[in-house]
Image (tube, rainbow, N blue to C red; front, side, top):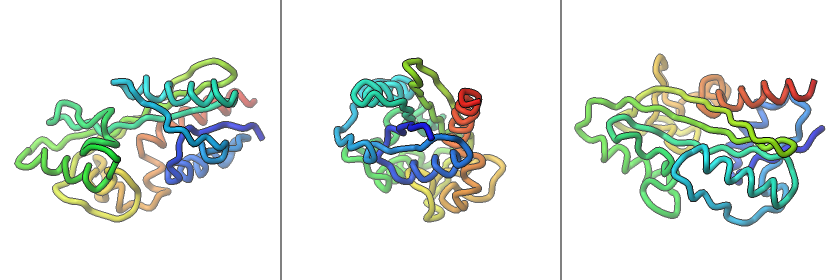
Length: 195
């Protein structure tokens, strides 16, 4: 098994990734697994730059192949906000409940509730940089629905579906989510590298 670090402390994300990687010859490790306790800065204005900053931090410090993601919820009526600031839209420290409350408040009276989740994955493999993107389009509900998932899942209804991400079993969400789509591209790429 080859070691590959996923630069996150979010155990929900690690669980999702491990389930998507189960047929690949990679041992996925989190920051906790490699004893990386520093807060990795995400100072940039784009998801792509922030994802690569996290991957580079781990690769340079621990000399381990690494990938990192950055995800944003982009709402058309809010000019793409919260976007790169999705995790801390309602301020610091990050708080999903407050973030959702702010989005619902900002969209009060707004008929255009179209939105998309976008994930960018930055991979550093043997010193080379790669990027993978996943997008899922949908709309923001008028209230929280469902208790599964995390982040904005209770207020995001993917187009063509009758359940929010927070109502879906994780297996169903993994088939269509932005992160799953980006990870699918990453997994396909890694599969080619390991043959």
